[in-house]
Amino acid sequence: MAKELKTNAMRILDKQKIPYELITYECDEFIDGLHSASITGAPVERSFKTLVVQGKSGQYYVLVIPIADEIDRKAAARAVGEKSIEMIHVKDITAVTGYVRGGCSPIGMKKQYPTYIQETAKQFDRIYVSGGRIGTTLHLETEALCRVSRGHYADLVVKQDQ
Image (cartoon, rainbow, N blue to C red):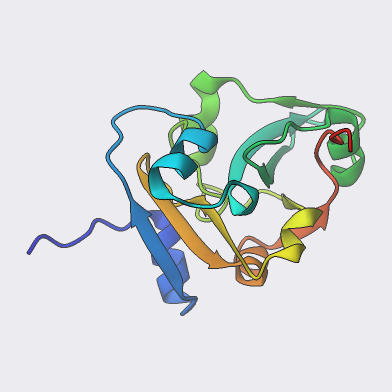
């Protein structure tokens, strides 16, 4: 039986003895988080995407937000302590993170960037995030993700009309 190739995210979780469920699905190219959740059966409200932004200072930041939400750039900039932030260009994702678009995990990037998790994640014991490769999702304890990514909770998303 072929051994599953581990991503940096999985190796770090294994090394720190943090349990996770690995979910894989067939996918050869980028699909958005909503489609990934549909394929895997992961609940949309518990599924989070990983975005990388750059502050006016030049510092990179990792933002983990619900897949159906959009970044509130002003709120996120305030949360990370910058005047403004911009999404990094798609062409720069691999160089900055070591991951590819659609397979960017908040765990195990090339460098440990300051990481911020949407505060609503705290309402769930476990959430779903990218496993570090297209077609790979990790289901793990929210607090474990926060610890291993050295994350901070913050309000990062555009408020939905109630």
